[in-house]
Amino acid sequence: MKQQDGFTLIEMLCALAILALVLGVSLRILAGSTAGASAGRDYGRLLAVAEAHLSALQTSDHVIPGERHGDGWSEKAVRADDPAFAGAAALKVLAWRLEATARSADGRSVTLTSVRLEPPQ
Image: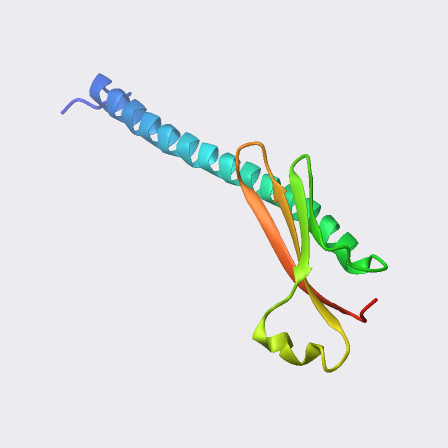
């Protein structure tokens, strides 16, 4: 029997085919994780904008009812008519529902909602 010193052509082709499959799958996984990281970063930016606007509504001297809009954001302050606040009038406080929304150019949005109690003016 003759001893073999190298690889045959068929062995090399099989090894290259396996390598191509592994690289193809790896590239798809890498592309998917990059897209996921980008979406997460965009969501983080939207969340930061919405949090900043909601914080401004919560910490202002008094609530100004209505809606305000800007480039990629909106704020809304309305009286909370939830039954949970039915006793608020007896306590002589106003319950406000505050809402801040941030929107991206591609249509995604984040909305944060909070409640604020304040004495009547």
